[in-house]
Amino acid sequence: MCLIVFAWRPDHSQRLIVAANRDEFYARPTLPLAHWPEAPGVYAGRDLEAGGTWLGVGPNGRFAALTNIRNPDRLVGKRSRGELVAHFLTGEQSVEAYLAEVAARADEYGGFNLLLGNRDSLYFLNAANAQPQRLEAGIYGVSNAGLDTPWPKLLKAKAALTEQLNDPQPAGLLNLLRDSQTAPVAELPETGVGLATETLLSSIFIASPSYGTRASTSLIINADGSRHFIEHSFGPYGGQLGEVELKV
Image (cartoon, rainbow, N blue to C red; front, side):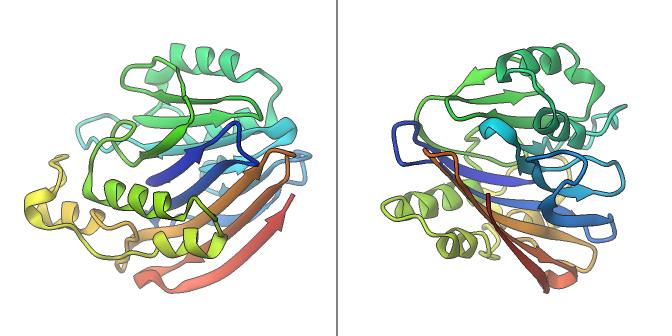
């Protein structure tokens, strides 16, 4: 997952509003959003190469999502980052206990941002500082750097989310995720991947022959515990492959 914008509103009837894009190589085998038969109450996509996932919900109000940190100089981690989401959704540890465990061994993974929550709280962990942060009510975003790093696409996506919060609807959340306009060269971050790649990755929705947005997800979690999920999946050049809608 490479872009997540979200509104955490613990005193609202719609507690968590999420719009997220997962960017990945199209050749990496993936299953779309679905119930995991071996894990009652878990709903997520699945990375078939390593077995983990990038975003999902689980029993007792559990929610988890992940992005990587873009750093071409960092060595590949010994373990798959997707397991961080999967293990939380399928496990029983509290958010706090799980994050403390992950923070202690964050160097086993490539760089990551991890977002975990339940009905009462929402936490963020950036592997670079390994200090879990409990989030107050607010509007946030994370891409491939730290929380709320002001990259152009993150600023644009947060602004679009803010405009919808009076009446959040899945169609609007999914629409903001389809913005394919790249940022001006003068506004691009410098993450060590070269100008052409920085430009490609600067749009909210990424499309190319080999790499791009594989899934766009809207998720609304209500105070009564109900969750409304819609996922659109995509292939090369951004062609839409499918849609899954779940109310759980």
